[in-house]
Image (tube, rainbow, N blue to C red; front, top):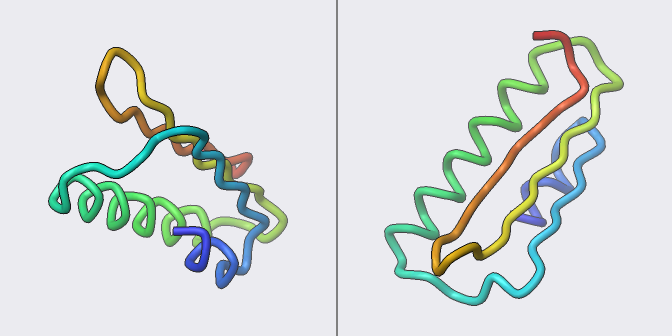
Length: 71
């Protein structure tokens, strides 16, 4: 995910502290959802920034993607 963020034309920050590994289907779903979010953000005016934050809460992986673009 960090490599995909580095290839993005936008400024992307990935935060994933102490999330550990998860079952492969979960990791794949998170990866592809985040890629789609990066592609959607890139469709808007340049200069937007994107933040991807992952954390484990109550035994579950929680992922939040936000951007500063319009909409």
